[in-house]
Amino acid sequence: MARKMEAVIFDNDNTIAKIYPNPKIYWKDVFVKTVAECGGSIPKGREEEYMLSYFTNKGFMEKLETIGLKTTWAHFQRAKGVVDERERIRYIRAGRSKLFPDAVRLMRELSAMKVKYAVATFTTKAVVLEAFKHVPGLQPPDAFFDWNDSLRDNLEKPNPRIAGIVLKKMNVSAKKAMMVGDRLTDIQMGNMAGMWTVLVKRRDEDGELVDQMEREIESARQDPENLKIVPDYQVTDLGQILGLL
Image 1 (spheres, rainbow, N blue to C red):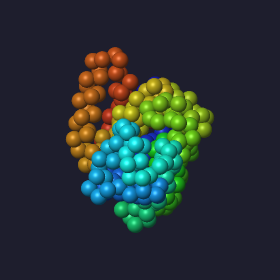
Image 2: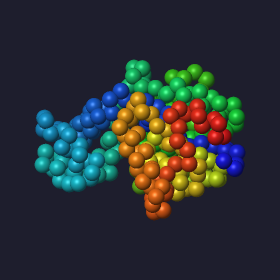
Image 3: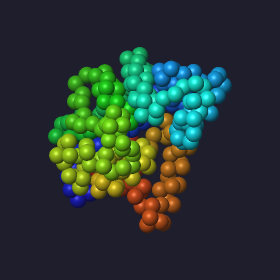
Image 4: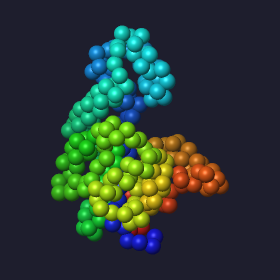
């Protein structure tokens, strides 16, 4: 790495924070409660069917109408943000969710080195700050891009504009910044923005997904059209990033 890093942008979920003990159960719960927040009720036993329609955005609004719920995509997304924030904060306060120990150690070192750090996530800023509040003396992130920013700007990963917005807030150039995430969309976003990129592989959390990502990366190395998903570095512990700075 030719330049000293001035900033690091982290993804949140599964990169710096363990948000839910069981992702599948958590997201099913949030989804059902979001439908209820909008005034509807999913027929028992068909929750996963409706969830799949939502996450693939295939006929979802029409499905809601079959249960007598008339809403808009924007309203449903806003409601999902409200429910997700409420549930995540409840998990954190109950001690069921927290920042990973290696993330805490790394961010303390970054603060000591005067390296800025930010979080680009599709949960809310309030959720991230709640987790930081439970670690005494830990400096909160210098900048954010969160769920509400995503709704307002109509941006999702891997759109590199997200990274650009966060870098502008920190007044740091892409060439002097690092994107750290646990998904290839994080890596693609960082690469397209001109940043250094690091994939953190949490096998205890992701299991076979790590193997799948490794296969995709190796395949992409042979295809110039897909190099944007290839990270500059891969680590299994965020502490390994210190050596890259």
